[in-house]
Structure formats: C-alpha cells, structure tokens
Length: 217
Image (tube, rainbow, N blue to C red; front, side, top):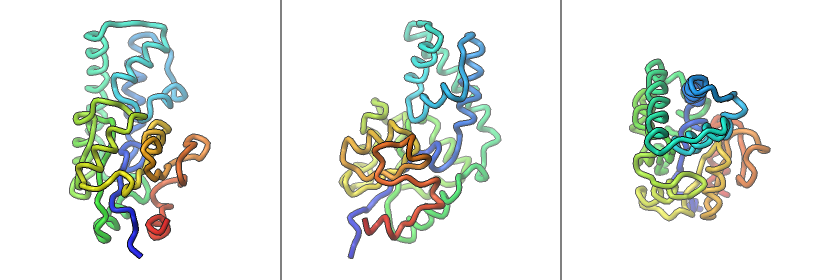
C-alpha cells in the first residue's frame, strides 16, 4: 500500500543539527552587554522563534524597551556574533540519525524541505555539506510570520508540490508542533514528550525514527 505521506518537512536547529549552543552564546553575550539576566532556562523560550521575537523577549526579561531601529541593530549584532561562532561548524555537528534519514528519503523518493525560522539556514546547510539532500529551503528570508503560525510549513508543502496533509513535520519546539497541528499535519516531535504536547509521536532523535512504521501510519 502506498503511503499517504509524500514529503518530510524538517525544522533545522534541534532536529538536523544543534546550533542552539551558538545561539545561546550570542544571546547571552548580548544580554550581558545590556545587563539583562539570561540563562539556559530563559533560552528555552527562544526555540523555534524568529530573531525579532527573541529580541522582544530578551528586552522583556529586563523590563526594557527599545524602538524598532534599536531592536534591529541589537538583533543584527547578535546575529553577527552567531555567524562568527558558526565558522567552526561542520558535518560533525549533525545530530544522530539525521544523515541516515536524509539518505533514506532520497532512496525512497520522499521529498524533503527545511522549514526553519533561521535566516542563516543556507549557511548552516552549506557548512554541514547537506544542501543537496533538500528539495526546498524555507527560512526566515522567505517567511513573514513566525511559528506557531503555520506559514513556513505551508510554503514548504507548496514549494514541494504536495498537499500539507501529505507531509510529516519533524520539530523540536512547541511552537512548531502547534504550527503543524493547526493545519492537521502529522508531527514527529524530537525531544522529551513533556516539552512537546500535541505531537503525534515523540522520539529522542532521528536515529530512533522507524520510517516504515511512520509511512504506514
């Protein structure tokens, strides 16, 4: 029996690779500069969220305000630091099972897309040497609405030429799970079940993915 699923839509950070530590270092550096308290627990709220929304959250942690021009300046400063940290990024940063799943998708003819809020997705994919494994890259340069709005996934499905309900989403952030389920798309959560309520299934990482079982769901 042919599977109803024709495409896999992958978030990038926390699913394919882990750049969270670099994001954290850059946000922490900015927070320290602004004398705003910020730690790894506070950083959890930034997962799957756009850069400018993160900037708003950071200012909120310090009960601070800034006009749009200043927020953009600070967010760009943070991003410059983040890109600096990525200079050491390479294929060793791939998370367990990621490359195997991507290779399996190619063998089975499953279409693939990156659906990420990151505007640095092309840089990251290039450094990981996996750009050729994706038929589409939908990132922060192509979207106007952040998760939990489903825009990024709907654009991914559209660019792949499939219906959203023919897709499977792989997400490590609650906002991404909410985005997918708002359009009745099947969502595989990556991480801990308690952090991803609403996901159809939750696995530790892509190394634990049973593609045959998933396609027969």
